[in-house]
Image (cartoon, rainbow, N blue to C red; front, side, top):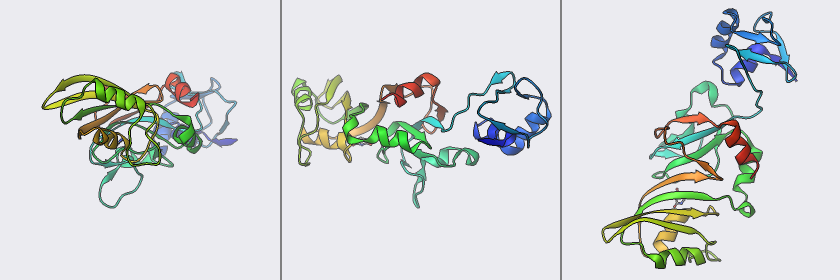
Length: 237
Ligand code: URA
């Protein structure tokens, strides 16, 4: 596959088409160690392209860790609310979508990609990819809830939920804080699980998925590209 150098650079997220043309003009881009003829020069996977002295690793797909804020819909289009894509600049939005869903009022880890195969793989029910949530709930959580979640609870589906790990962080009569790890993704699953044991979720944030942690340096609404290591972890699921 041969594509124009300016398209390659823009696709790799170096900048917009006009920005990357500037970079080429300013001699900040090299192809196989030499200055390119210009932005129209064709390049392929075998070429080593560098920008400001760093090699650009060709990636067919894009993978972002997004800190979903409250009030953002886990979708690419919505008539009423802001969507995940509204947090990405227009030149990076092409083909991107969120992997799975978080409720409108849930915050936290959302993987955003244009890789349909990876999304399919991570969301396949048989995969049991672990997802951990931090929750503030009403009432006092006890060891009894830990046991119930470990056995599976009835949330009105044909089967009980799969065993889930509840770790209580604080427990007061006025409310408790806990982390819950589940390996399924049923609609409103965490809220329904707490409901099944007589408590109500007041705040919910996903803090990890498939072994990848939410990057706490990302404020709600911010994103960053996955590192090579993170990508390997998630594609090796
Ligand atoms: N479970 C829920 O109830 N809500 C979410 O957003 C995610 C999991």
